Image: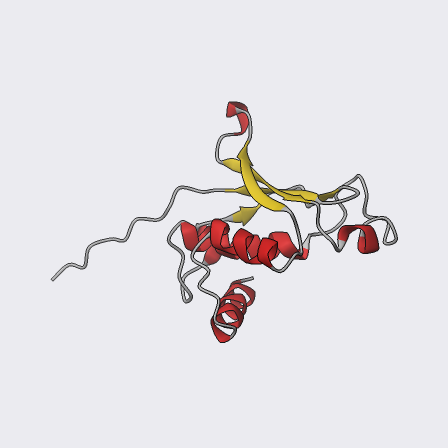
Length: 135
């Protein structure tokens, strides 16, 4: 996943996209008409440290989700959720060369696909603190 995340950031840079977080990615995907919304919602307090990434009205969903049998139970991972994970990690301080799972992790359950979108749960571990260099 680490090299995937670094490749995604390189791809964004190559295409002149200044993605610094989830809002930037959302704005780009909405602008090209791929989806209507992409946002994070927090879960109930008993599952602190987890958030759900919601993709609403994805144009690919009708062509992929039902024909591939993805509706309902989590069987796979949404590619937009993978990209959003990288954006969310950037927002939390991740940079290429650092372990991305220190900033964002997939939860045990994979993506729950709907007719026109998806929901993917991520774990947000405490952000690592840089240790001061001793002289």
